[in-house]
Each structure stands twice: as C-alpha cells, then as structure tokens.
Length: 267
Ligand SMILES: NC(=O)c1ccc[n+]([C@@H]2O[C@H](COP(=O)([O-])OP(=O)(O)OC[C@H]3O[C@@H](n4cnc5c(N)ncnc54)[C@H](OP(=O)(O)O)[C@@H]3O)[C@@H](O)[C@H]2O)c1
Image (cartoon, rainbow, N blue to C red):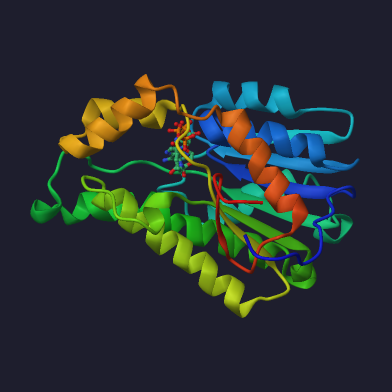
C-alpha cells in the first residue's frame, strides 16, 4: 500500500450509497460503514431484492444514521432513474449539508462460466454482463458526481474490485475483463480528479453466494479446483472481516489515487 496521504474523516454528516447491498460483501460493507458515519448521515442501499435490502437497512439504522433502500435492477436502470433515486434518498436535504459523499460500487456478477474463452461469441450476453458490471457502474458514478458537482472535493469513491482485475484466471473471461475495465475507469477518474478520493478495494476470496455459483457453473477444471480448495480448506474470508479491512484502508487514507489495494496487502 502507498504511503500516507490524510485520513478520511467520516465523523460529520455523510451521504453514503452502497450498491449490491442485499447480501454478501455489500451487506457487510453497509453495516461496517454505518458504524463509522457521523450524526445526521443518510444511507442509500441499492439491489433488486427488496426484503433483503430491508434486512440490511435494519442492521445499519441508528440514531446517527437514517437508511433508505431502493429495489432497482442496475443492469437496466436509466441515468434519469438513477438520478431520481439519488435525489429521492436525499429526502429534501442539499448535498452541501453533507461533509462527505461516499459511494461503494459493490454490485457485481460472475458472467458465463460455462463457455470457453476461445468460444465466446454471444455478444448480447456479453453486452448484458458489461451493462451491469461496467457501463451502469460508470453511469451511476457519473450521476453521483453530477449530484455533488458543487462540492466535488467531498466525494469519496470505493470500487469493489478483484484480484481478477489484474491477474488472469482461466474460465473467468467475462469476470476478469469486466473487473479490469471497471477498475481502469476508476483509475483514470482518480488520475483526472486528484481532489476526489478513489479506492479500488479487492476483498480477497469471500464466503458468499458468488463462490457457490462458481462451483455450480464453472466448466474450467482449474477454476473449480481453486474454489473447491478455498472452500474445503476453510480459507474463505467472512464478509464482515473483509468489510472491516476495507473500512480500515479507507479511513486511513493510505492509498494512492485509484490504487488497487488487496485484503492481503501489507499495511
Ligand atoms: N465473493 C468473493 O470472493 C469476491 C472476491 C472478489 C471480489 N468480489 C466482488 O465483491 C462484490 C460483491 O460480491 P459478493 O460475493 O458479495 O456477491 P453476491 O453475494 O452475489 O452479491 C452481489 C450483489 O449484487 C446485487 N446485484 C446483482 N445483480 C444486480 C442487478 N442486476 N441489479 C442490482 N443489484 C444486483 C445482488 O443483489 P440482488 O440479487 O438483490 O439484486 C447482491 O446484493 C462483487 O463486485 C464481486 O465481484 C467478490
């Protein structure tokens, strides 16, 4: 990890968005970030499963933090819809009321694990994958930046990335290429906007539904072996463990603009 810039102070009122907050890492991040937010903070949780969002919201809600959630398919939401959702969550307050505008781009999916990389030709399917994992992430981030335009220096962005963004993993061409494109977008943004804090956090292998999906769907033997041994050897991290580390890295501010910081990196 890079040497220190300044700490990130969330002790004032913050407006915080978490995508993919209905389960797994997103839920754990929402819970951890809620503990760090100052009085008069607002959180907005996004995903499709409404009941699960309500569960996350109840885990985050406190005297200091008011939580709203919106059931939305982020693979198809229009830019207007995203902006409406963000504005609605502000509940009549102005962005200038908040000392920090924080967004966690956690939403993600695996893509097709049953196609060989040398036989990828279903472009509509690939496009759908990129819609959710890349294009609409960029769109949501853009709406967030537009919302905070007048106080852009208060924006803090965390992209939940993966080792797969920087290291090829056989059998995961959709996932690796999507994660790489998404991470590079945030790195370029950080390069241009030095006054915005941007972190690419890679959570390590985490015990979530995503891991079960790999074991159910993967046709690549090596991929299955890697994930089977993660599972059997008990080396998968609990979502709350990696979420705590994410917050620790974020609050320390010890990362370069857009830096890829992994759970296993030295502190
Ligand atoms: N688990 C790991 O080992 C691991 C490792 C490295 C990186 N990551 C990354 O961490 C992030 C979270 O992964 P996870 O393991 O927690 O996965 P997960 O349990 O499958 O959670 C994915 C989240 O994304 C939401 N989502 C999926 N499709 C959506 C859509 N069309 N519209 C809105 N929300 C949608 C899901 O909610 P709904 O179904 O309710 O919509 C869910 O809340 C992902 O970006 C993943 O790539 C995970």
